[in-house]
Image (cartoon, rainbow, N blue to C red; front, side):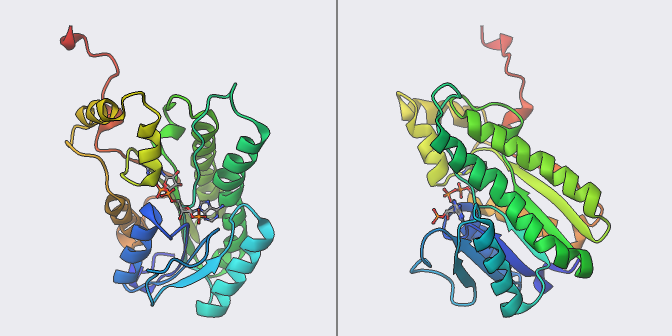
Length: 253
Ligand code: NDP
């Protein structure tokens, strides 16, 4: 189960940009074989040593073909990182059926599709699954009803896979806070005064900065390796201490 990360044959979903790209590059640097996917064509700056398949994780048939391609390229997958995700900034009252299909399709069904497709191999050969959840699955970000709920699903599925598919398979989640990518920028853009929202958010980070994609990639590298061998079924909050604070601050008044 616990290969050194250098020996992994890894699928990372949504590796074209942002957090997924940082994970792909970190795993490559650690010596893993990596295959990634996205709904778009292979990015022009895609690393030569990584494989790319154009695929939508929400579609079970495309996921089946993706895992078959990975098997043909490098054999049984030993590490799956479910990173692909989408965000819709709406309350439940404002959300429509299209929003449901997109957010639940990618963030919930996509993770389920990928896990279901690799688990038969992992149950034979051993494996490690790392899901990218969110602090939004624990505390509610305003105007993100479906997104928040979809990440709570990811956390729940993480525990179920760990419980049902150990000891050959370990499964954990990383729950990032504000990691500076296109997705985080879209969140701040919702504010009437985005700069004031950024300043306020920054002040709420005990470590004094927002997260970077490499912060998540570092956590993935640790979870993928033997040093985290005793950890399974856990959702690790990676938010610079933001949600450690009480929301009540009487000292300010
Ligand atoms: P980005 O929007 O920057 O990147 C998302 C990637 O996922 C894109 O490459 C996109 O490619 C791919 N993707 C989206 N939908 C699909 C799909 N159906 N099938 C395959 N690939 C898909 O997001 P981030 O890098 O910011 O986020 C990555 C993960 O981290 C997400 O799960 C997100 O929810 C989570 N997260 C992010 C936080 C942040 O602050 N940034 C905080 C907490 C969690 P394409 O559009 O071409 O398909």
